[in-house]
Length: 174
Image (tube, rainbow, N blue to C red; front, side):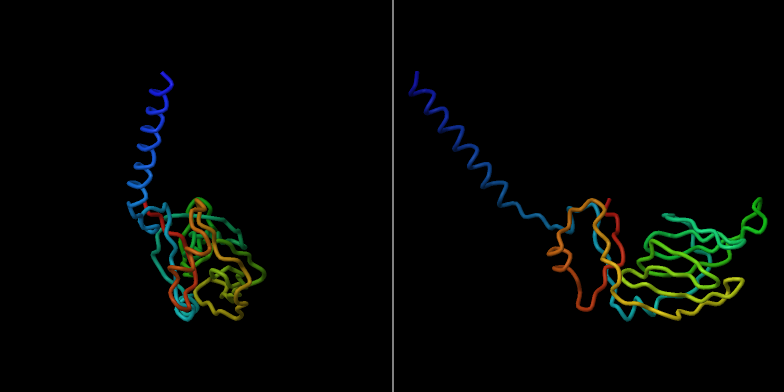
């Protein structure tokens, strides 16, 4: 009886070891099997991309900020929708300020302070939000965005980072 239990234990152990070898030979690409993938931009491109756009739909809204008769609605990782709310029963989209890596903002007087990925920028705006100018940029003041599911290590993020690449967003992979 003792002999049978020992042989049975050895067989089970051997099957487990073989299973480990089989599963360890399967290669997984971290990029293909993650819920989110990092989005990188060259620093110069990120800085030049700040600007006004029109007809940008609201897809992934974030924070809301009220400034005078305007609603500033963050579009996560992409920028800020400007909505004229002078007539609350009929709000009107005025413009969109494209800012890669933007998830937060504040306004004082006619200056919007926003994150541009790892940078803090000050944007001077006209009273009707038809003209903007980046007046100041403080580089690398914020940490990079974390993976929403925290599957990526710093090493993995840097492994796929292009030269002079700034992580500006996490793109859903599902």
